[in-house]
Amino acid sequence: INFLAIIPGKEYSSEQVIRFRNKYQLKSLKFLFDPKYQLCEALGATITPEVFVVTRNGQGVYSGRIDNWAYELSKKRKVITEHDLLNVLQNIQQNKPLKPYQTKAVGCYIR
Image (tube, rainbow, N blue to C red; front, side, top):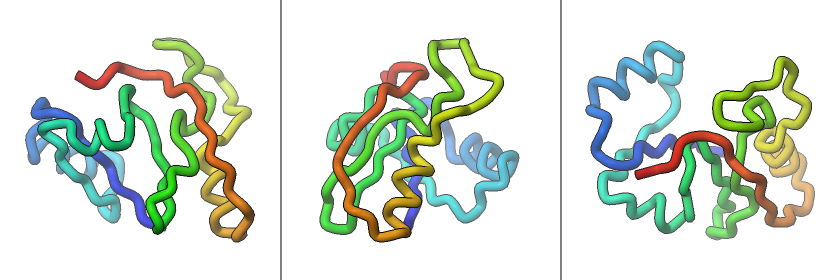
């Protein structure tokens, strides 16, 4: 499984992204700048954070939230009870059949 972080727009410099990557120890995560929102548009990304799981053959199998920690803007649960992204990734690792689905991401609008 490969992970890619997409930085939409032109708001963040390379230096800011490097500091973020270092602060959160994400050195193995690849970052891709999307200044014209082309990748965001291709995926249908509208919120940040929002995740997309795409198979090697290009089939989208999941889009939405990482988990249910944030349930409204500025409202967070003390205990995460649903691990949407983790469940999809575990199904991939276990070669289980994948049915495309999505959840509602909670965050800030892109643009």
